[in-house]
Length: 449
Image 1 (cartoon, helix red, strand yellow):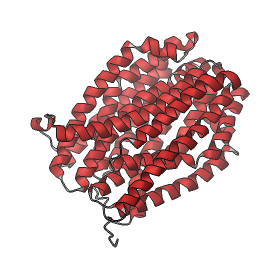
Image 2 (tube, one colour; image 1 turned 90 degrees about the vertical axis):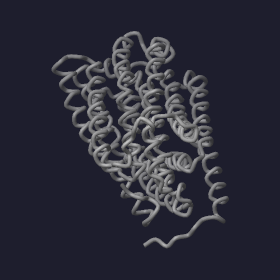
Image 3 (cartoon, rainbow, N blue to C red; image 1 turned 135 degrees about the vertical axis):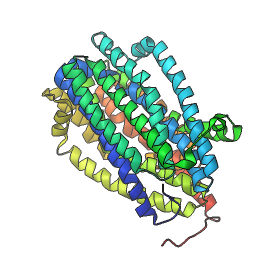
Image 4 (cartoon, rainbow, N blue to C red; image 1 turned 60 degrees about the vertical axis):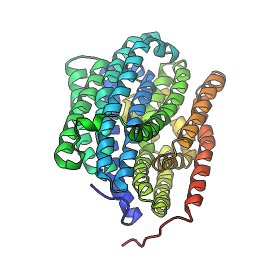
């Protein structure tokens, strides 16, 4: 447990971000391992089947993660203001509301599964395997919401290291189960999905047990689950906002995937691989965004706008340095990374994936600006601007997928995100500048020791 409203902002942010970064690296590692294992033991068609619905997976999981993180922002605000009782109430309601919303998502997704795959233009030869994989992932969302609510609330009270421990356990277990289910039990792509869900279930159980034992002030009772408007309203505003923000981003990417799925197996595999690499490159941006949501939430609750301003400078500065490193990597070692991810030797797959990387990384400075400002604004109680910005992203990707890709092929996909980034960053910058100007006269300046 750590109070983020005191101490040097740079030290606090980096200390808090490090375990989140390591945890996300392990999370990404088992996703990459999943891709590698499927590609090695099941072949290119199975890899394409999983890749065809990867963005649907991102959309559903992204909403659940955003929902949990949004609830945790409210916990962080109450914790920052020193109110432990309200922190406990939000924690309990986060579990209840998270399970209810997830149940609706699971039911709707399973009912409309066929229509979703039709809309995504999943190829007939991939459809059966794609359905097997995503159906298991959807049911496993119940474990995902429990773990993410627990992890989000732990981070909200300043404990970023405990979620890391359980995520590492989950990642290692996932890889082991992947090999067992896919190679030895011959469960096909369904085995890879089962491995993911089982490892998430273990991490959720372990995380709950630790939280209950370690933090007595979070011990809820039946009364804490009784809905109260003063809690439900801000929690839904924050949770649905961050969930929708993530989903709008993923839905826009899903629109692009529908166009990609018409370009052939090699392009599908290439894009699935390059998205895995992109997720790796963008990981520090996501981590610093998550950090700033908690850091911003606690300091917003404490009225410390001066610390929020300092935190933004630190987070953006570190991100811009990483952007330069990523661009250099894209022009030097990209082919080796694609081969490592997919185990492919098909030159068209490698060339297509690297073409995407070489173009898009030139515009990466826009990405951390978007991610960090978007999460910081959420922590500061602005739930409208981030959704509006994400809505612009969705609209841009849908238009490009509909109008541009049929004309110029995969180049339409390549240019789509830089164009969209340049547009969606504008309202975020404007909103943050306005908020800081309004707060300027009321900022309490403290000397950090």
